[in-house]
Length: 97
Image (cartoon, rainbow, N blue to C red):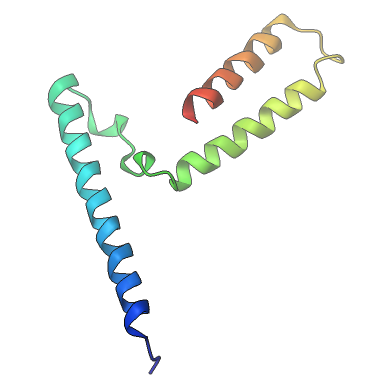
């Protein structure tokens, strides 16, 4: 059996308590949004209000990659539509910050 020091156990308890508080805040946020704005459940990603949301990280990674590809190829493909798309992606990435 693994031995834990008292300080290690306190750190675990603190981390778990913070996580529980974050989840309670998340539920309050979701319920408030649903009541005030009549948002459908499918429009809410509960994990996304956490800074370490895996969905948000994946989206940011893909957006960054797409922007990079569009930036690298903008001279080869002189397309106004691709330029507009690239700028929209940059804006979305900046807003998700």
